[in-house]
Length: 303
Image (cartoon, rainbow, N blue to C red):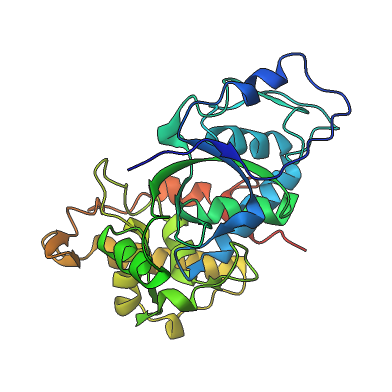
């Protein structure tokens, strides 16, 4: 494994910089690279559009959340200060609590391919939602975990990515070729996986992600539950029916035997118990989703 520190062409236009904002850019540790969102390529074919709609709408009503999420995703904990002129396209227009890269374990991750391009291995939903609210030229500090630029070709790269479990090549229970993945990480380029959104909203309602979770944890959950509750039985077009769908899916999850196998990953079986699925549906957390500022309420407020 080899780490790279560098920047991909970024010009910062400074109008009213915060006094210590430059420090958070200049104090980035090795292993962290700065790219624009447009420079990132996906390693999965789909995201949950409804999940992204929730975040986009919440950012509209609560701008601080957008800066908090950005600072967290860049290893800088949370936002410290920002104003009406602050924008994610200008890293000197707001300040995080720590320097970028201070907490690398919280950062979105990438690998470098033989073609010199960067492939995102964690953070497709985050990048998609920031793309939507801030644009393709938004800069982002990411953590480079693997440098595969010395591999002989992209075919070898794709094989290594699968071997290392750094790519998800399934959509609606069908295999997708690495070469068929879209060019960019946006909601327009990536397909919509309804079950991936449903799993997001059912966090803490029907399951809790284990500390040592399987790679692509929620995709495996989504794939498993889609066979129990087919998409054709669900109406996901409005908030009321979405609430019914969430409850039906959540109940189907918790009613499954604790020793039922959810996924087999590289020969290892992961059961309902292993996947952190609850034995009881959490009604209180479920109700929070539909409060005036609940996640599902925001998700269906898009005009």
